Length: 328
Image 1 (tube, rainbow, N blue to C red):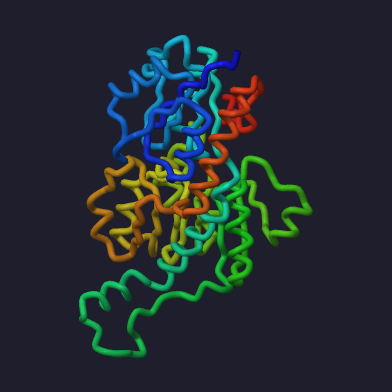
Image 2: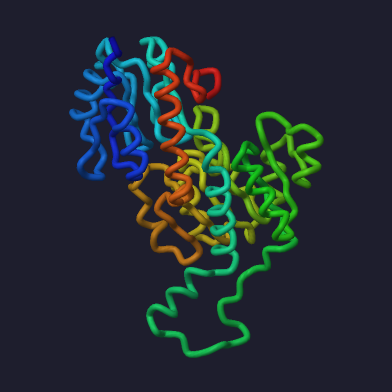
């Protein structure tokens, strides 16, 4: 007698090919629209499903997990970051958590370089004047930005994404520096042409560009706080394609408004979609709607990882991308 299919609840619309494959393998409840689930819907899902497939827009906190029924055994997150999931509480309840690491490094690194170029070369200002029809021709001193080559790039967080950023930066002629919880092996440093800084303060004070590429954890919350932002050179810029909580957004806004920092490129925000309204009005800031990993290829590969994690679990094995509290 064949066993019944796992009950899987997916909280957001996923690429069509991913949803099709999930439906072939499991008993799946899909979203009919692409809006985040209401809290009440999440409570119902977590009570009745064997597997929950959430995204970064779902707050899977301890209070929600307390509602989990006896059936829920796996939270297969669609995304690499799990700061929206209380992994420790899930583990206490016997619920495994998995994610989708490693498939978005190149896509996010591409967007990091795009933001660096956009800020230094004032790309949004150029787009705006062209779209408004206000351009009246070339001028020697118009829209002057800064040359990328030769600038010092300080990477905060040298994991997969940070290393992918480093490779791209070297190709652009930038000097790569980094701060990380653990220093890279000498051969990796040599390959990336990267200089390690044990002191984040000292690195920040000497860089032309800071790229935030570390995960959101309790230890990285406001890692770039007001004091540390003030260490940056007035002509320096900062970009963030990681998590908004790593930067004190209010402090950053104040410094950008006063030209204490030359510019910023942000793809993520401290309060999700609630972006500081003063930040929106600044000409020296490039704002994107969390697009860092938004490629068709990347989204499909994320879905493949979710499916592999669920299928491996269903076969009685540990999901290959299981997340445990000690990893965070």
